[in-house]
Amino acid sequence: MWIMEMVSYNSTWKDCECQWTICLSSLPNCSRNQSLRLFLINNYDMTIAVLKEAGPDGGKIQMHFEEFLKSNTAIYVEELLAEHFHDLIKFVKTRASEDPCSGSERPITVSEVESIVKDFGSRWKAAIELMHNDVSTSFSNFLCGMEILRAALTQLLLYYTRLSDCMKKIAGGSALNKDLVSISSIMYEIRKYSRTF
Image (cartoon, rainbow, N blue to C red):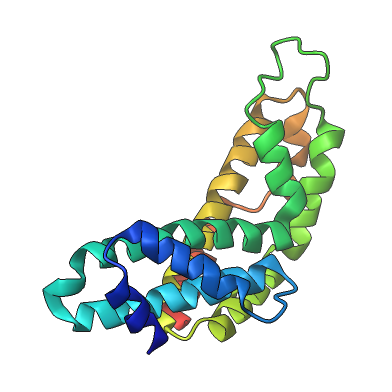
């Protein structure tokens, strides 16, 4: 109810954003950023649902809440992936775009990616299961949760594909082919969890 009051008293999205900041600062100690992010996503989603029921009056404000939801969802997806696949993401963001043949100061070596590939190969299914469990218990709207899980798994696939592509360019990288998880196996898991949420 406080959300509708807040929206009705504020005619522009900047005012809404300011009111959300005030509301969040009055929350009891949110010890983790992820808890705060979950709070925001669940409440933005609920606000959007209420605004949709209100009819055309909430249209412009609804669009701004949808933007808030989208940006917080993207941050949450990255936080969720980093919790389970930190080394993979760090490598892809910092090193995978480098050309191993360019003669850079510190070329990418097989030993640098070996631990990442082996770690991923040994834990990826269990980590996806944990992510599924986190998402299924964290979101009040199951459709919103399913979209977030799908986005996280798709982003994971993109990170892993970049790692695989990088390995093809590394001298001796083919030695790790036996440890690579196939892209089709990851896609199968994405489809499996997308259906069962």
